[in-house]
Image 1: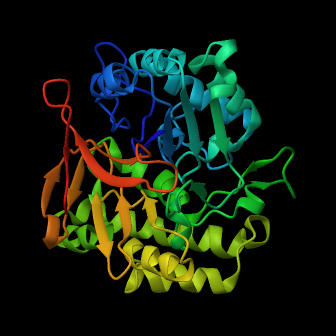
Image 2: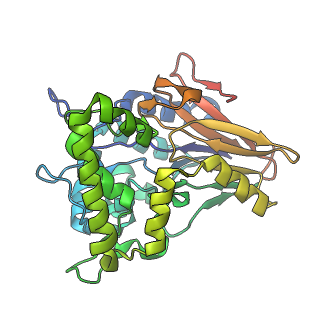
Length: 365
């Protein structure tokens, strides 16, 4: 068996011919197609290969509906958004179909915080019908209700957003129905912030949602780009009050959760590596934890038992203001869990895709 774990590609509606879509951050369709072709041919042709899309593979939040970005997302709206994504990336659709058509190849979709639309049954059926021919539908699986995905050999895969109050999604309350004519997605505050604060700015500042950590950027922008930063801060404050207090009953918001968001954003933004260490300490049968979400590719091994933490990073542009990784990067990073030595002895690694001329290079940081 071979497991390939990708996360945070943030594929949106694409770029129409002759136009530029400022809300699309994924521009590497050919690179992904080569990646899939490589891992379904040659040495991988006869192997059982599972492609695990570990959250935020699609990004329907950045698909507009008649020029606006609604925060009340029904199943019909979700289907419309995901349809536009699949139509906007025919190369990716075809490459996924070709991958699944090979013997022993499967796809598992793990929910993130930017692709909650995938939780709707109609969206899952749409994805299956477009990506897989009818005879391959059973090769596509969705993990919607589970907090993590455990693989053989003590390897746990999870997106990572549940460790942030800002982006935490409760799998038991994915939808809101009370007070609405039909169920809508129960979006976390981070999604509301993207829809109502960042996306209205993105047409003029296309990089606005690619900067990490964002609070550090906003602090500097107060001096260097105050014309945008000050109104954005005001809008953020308005929508925070609106969603956390005035709509609290509908959105199942607790006061304690609100305080945790404020505390994390002010001084204590969680470090996913710390969360991984905690998971490994609490679960001695686990040998590796693989996450995404933070967009920072990383691999760490912890003594004494040699447990591993991997963050798969992102395939979009990353503008890092962190001194340890300062600069603008585009790295096609992914995790590999290789069971060549048997199901009880997985080899876990972090890799970077370069293309067919140089397929991969293992990273050690």
